[in-house]
Amino acid sequence: MDVLYFAWVRERIGLPKERVETGAATVAELVEELKTREERYALAFADLSALRVAVDQELTDFDAPLAGVREVAFFPPMTGG
Image (cartoon, rainbow, N blue to C red; front, side, top):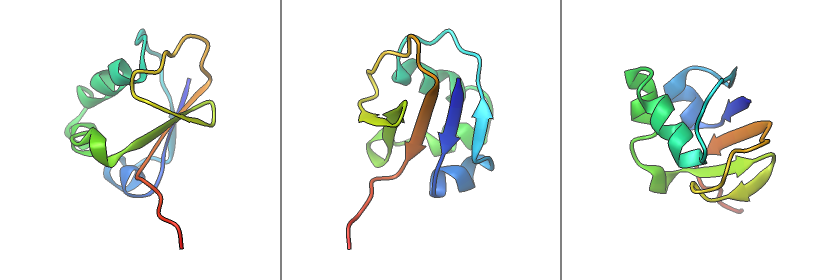
């Protein structure tokens, strides 16, 4: 699946997008896998309350299933203005 990173998440990880092979069943499990890759991932995902996630371009929770998913995106909460 494609994993996309936006705003400061992209800055911390150093990539806008990557292809990830995973056995994770949920977004939360995917995050745990990513955190073990390198310190930059652990830092980016240290505080999940500061992140939002979209699965196939639909906002969702970290307990969302990944079966059949093509894209997961991580980004900070958005503010209006």
